[in-house]
Image (cartoon, rainbow, N blue to C red; front, side):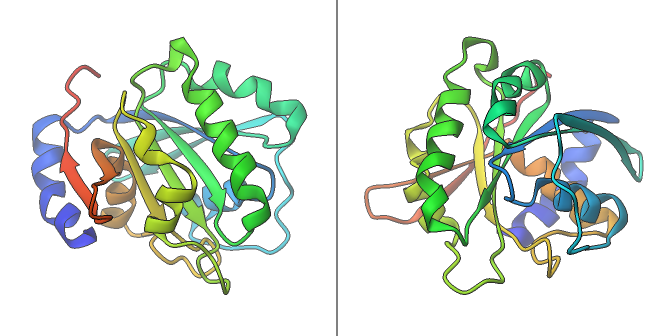
Length: 206
C-alpha cells in the first residue's frame, strides 16, 4: 500500500496539494501523540516526553508544505476540548496505543463519540495504532475490527500501524512525511470476506 501511495504522491501534489494544512492530533493519554509530533518534526525519539497538559500547537514545514498541528491532551479532563480543536481542520489524526488491549474499548468509544459531533461531519480521519514494536500490538486489520472503523461511513478514514520509537511506518524524509499526511484521502473498510479494501477519494472541497 505504501508503494501505491508513493507512486501517486507526485500526481496528487501537482493536482491539488495544499501549501498549508491544519491537523488536530487526539487520543487517550500515553498513546504517543506528543512523541509522534516530535518524531515528525525533528526525527528524534525520546523516552522522557512529558504528556501534553491542555494543548500544544506546532508548525512543521516539510518541503513546500507547512503543517499546523494541534496536539491535544488525552486525559479525561481535556477530552471535552477535542471537538473545539477539531473543527474546520484538514484532517483529524487519532492516536491509539495498539499494545494496550485494556484501553482499546475506551479509545474506540472516544473516537466514535467525537465523530458523532455535527460540526465535525465529513472531516477525514487518520487512525494510527502506535507501539507496533511491542509484542502483542494490534495490526491494521485488528485495529479496524476492534475500533469498529468499518461503521464510520460519513467520511474518509484510514488506519496505519506505526512505531514512534522505531520510526516504523513514520517517514522522516520529505517524501514519506507527505505520504503519511495525504493518507487521509484514502478510505479503508473491511468487506464481507474480511479483506482490507482501499479506495481513493479526492476531496476537492477543501
